Structure formats: structure tokens, C-alpha cells
Length: 215
Image (cartoon, rainbow, N blue to C red; front, side):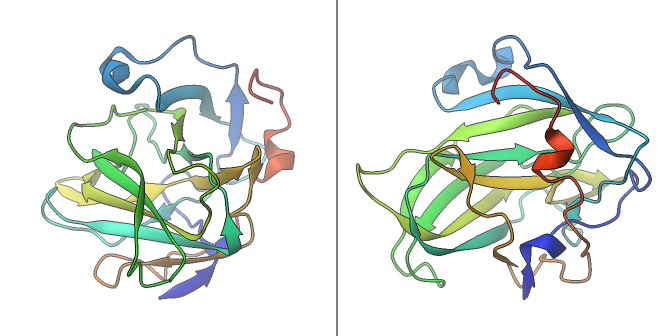
């Protein structure tokens, strides 16, 4: 299933709310200490009544031990320095569908016949970020570049009641500090990928113009 990345964001309980970025959080969540060099909690996202934001939400699964992925075609082989994940969260500031365990891979074929691991968070739970943006620094051989980047959740978190799934408000793939996934084609796994959950990416760079220490 394939959709344009500008259709990667869709409605959820936050329809009618929007996102603003508040200043960079100090330090890292203590639960992420083991991966301080690769995973950082950045600025917070808060509901803001001016516009809407619509996250991607996968189909639901009955078990956390279910795999789901999303994949981006960057259009050309690109050096990837990191991935920034904007969580979907509820009014209790609990992330919805943010993966408990995840890996990020790069490839130059859409079927990932040859794969490079850019980040492996499959051995221990990642922190629930709540409303905080998560930056994941990727590691790859020097001068390596990839056209396709895939985020695979190997353990899911709850989205709706007892059900589990994969959800992000936004995903950025960064190269030289620029989001190279913006406007590119995204795909998802056949089992839980949700092609019906579509909508425009409503808070691009202009919506995040409130300065943070990372801008």
C-alpha cells in the first residue's frame, strides 16, 4: 500500500487541535540512559487551537508482540544522520502507538533485500515520550547512503483501550539537518498498514516556526 507522504497524517482524537513546540527539554529521560548517545527527548508538543493536526494510525492489533512498519522512499540514495519522531498523544500526555521497541534500517531496494541497520532499539523498551519529540541518531558506515528508510516496530504500545498499534504525528528523515522525507512516498506493511488513514501533513516547517534551541 502506497501513499504520498503528504497523505501520511490522518485524523484521531486530536482533530481540531494543533501543535506548537515549547523549548527543548533539559537532558534525557532517565529511562533512556542506556542510549543517551542515540536517543534524545527534544521539545514538547502541545495542543494549540489555531489549526488541526492529524496523525498516522495503523490498524489495530490484539497483542503488543506484533510487527508493523512504515517506509519512506527518499527519491535518491541519501546519507541519513537521524530520524525525528513526533508522537501522537492524548490529553493525559501519554503517547499513543509510539513503539516500545523499534529498529531503523536503510536500503537501496524497496524490498529491503540488502539491509543496513541504522538504529537497533529492539533489545530494550524505549521510553514513552508523552508529548516530547524524539530524535534518534542513526549510525551507518562513513559515506553510506540509502534511498529507502524503514521504521519497524517489533513491540507495539496501546492506541485504543486494550488494542495496540503504530502511530506517529510526523516522521522526519534528516540529512544535513534537512527533512528529506518531506513530500516523498511512504509505504506500510500489508497487515497493519492503514491506507485509509490519510490526510495532509498540516504542520510543516512553517507550523514549527516557534524557535527552539535545535533550530
